[in-house]
Length: 411
Figure: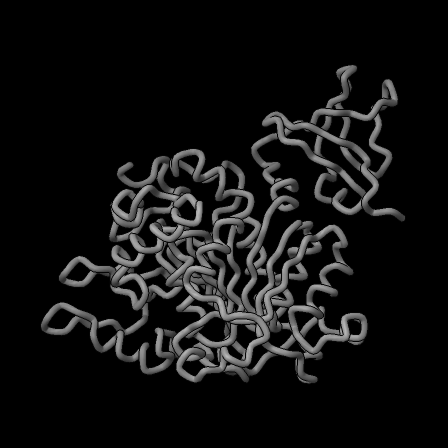
């Protein structure tokens, strides 16, 4: 069977073109289409033809609950940093869903213990690539699932404080990703998925990309029993390093959370979280990775189908029908005890100087201004004209979810 065979080319009420193929047919199953003769039929098994005139219908009828936007996935470009167990799951899911473009980043090579937890690393993909590097083998695995994907590999990591201090980046195959390189990547990617080992790279990526593109991050704790999924929207929600309810944050006599910052800097050199692994070698189990990868993928889908419309609509409301991503909250996952899974709200706390209490956001105004200068110099456009016009700056104690507010912020 040729899964690329086009069964119908449909145009919806928003003038968006949908190519229905054998591969993506199930994403359209049950949707209504209208033929030029006026007949309305439901998409089922092929062939997709009108019952009255036997022509192929050309109009896709949309309704509020039919929010699934397959063309948005097929045209999307996702930046995935970290090709380990969770990165494998997210990449595999996005490929099967039809995401058309992906850049994958990892400096590491495959070891034998990876093979029991990574669906894209197997004897077939490893023999076919004859490469020891994760990015090369993952690319082969993704193309076997979705031959139409455009995949760019970068056999490197980010130049976080620990990698820089230890000099480990000197041994990476490709040049380490620095500030400007990450900013440049943001100009042609719709979002970033962080699936790295350790907190230092997560903090570094957040520092650069948080103001620029949406981020989804997923990680396991050191025992492999608890995981978290977090999402950030540029200068709207808190970043993925912002403290949450339950974190110990105390202001000193000068009104500054100095002890909180010191604890984070001691752990990673760039911030972190006590219960999550800050170095490679955390316990990892296939079933837990699959659960966390699926949850992270669902966040990606919500962003890829909703973010651009949210921006173009002036941030007034999240697109109708599209599930809202995590909003100023963290989802704590207990894969083997799902009843314990729950969301934890971010603190959205300010110090006495009205700076955000966050190891990465405390100097947000200065850093964003510099980041925007670099972005504009290389031809990119920021989400907001300036930090001072962003929803986060205008609503420092937290932007309400658009599921509760018809209109956001003070725009």
